[in-house]
Amino acid sequence: MCLAKPVKIAKVSYPKASLEDGRQVDLSLIDNPQEGDWLLCHANLAINKLPEDEAQEILKLNKMCTHKEINVPYYTG
Picture: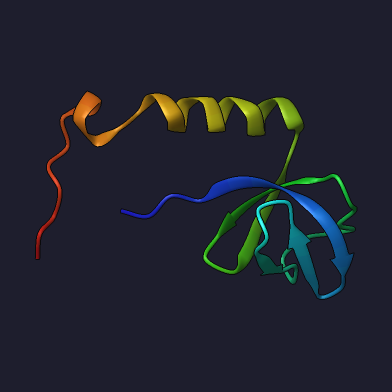
């Protein structure tokens, strides 16, 4: 399973954005992206804009949910 991660836009150069974590993502699915907006991103694609409080809540929950804590076995292929 893959998770999309919230991250803040540092700079917009449409159709791409530089993010605060150093990555660049495609903004094709985002209406009117602005510096400082929070995005839900997966791989190199911005999926949705988020309010800051929702982005912070997701980040907080991600930190709390490690595989060990929720007892999900790792796939070893």
